[in-house]
Length: 226
Ligand code: HEM
Image (cartoon, rainbow, N blue to C red; front, top):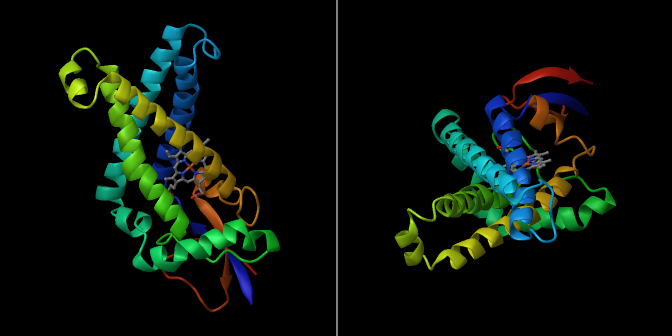
């Protein structure tokens, strides 16, 4: 027999970071579009207003990223456990998960990954979140930061290949973020209900189906419905 349990999956600091970051990144993408294509796109009125909002959102995303890093490294100390794929994840887990998303899901087969607070992410999520959080986000923050201080950092920018190179890299990185956003939101709707993965990002709790007589001591449970 199986029963449902409520599991505390996403601590409050992570939820606050996530929605601040999501709001910041969406603002950066929208203002960035106007800054890059001012002749075609005008969402925020004056060009200078778009730049000011872009810079402000950039600072918000950078500071919240730093807090996310400190939280996972020094407070929760679970960055490696949650975000770094294991050898088994890379050898077979990623392919099993991709097979589920691309095919098995549409035939009603169960998700091969069972989330617990200690293993929140499936192998594909681990790989994607690791690249986004430890490679792309730091790079976009760094390239954006350099672009905010072009005049004083002129010498350094020339060493890095010049402003055009930096602007091009920053733009390519933002395209990766836009692509990630669409895939991320689509995959997040593939829980047992379309909102199943959104609820724990809002209130922290996720409903899990568990085999009877198989309690997981790592889980913090408040409610159980047979
Ligand atoms: C409107 C935009 C966004 C929505 C609606 C959204 C939605 C979600 C949802 C439902 C989850 C929980 C399910 C899951 O783990 O996949 C999640 C987790 C996550 N999202 Fe997003 N997201 C958005 C933007 C972003 C952005 C821009 C980033 C990174 C740059 C991001 C990075 C993450 C990470 C790292 C997690 C796991 C958090 C943790 O538990 O440690 N999300 N998101």
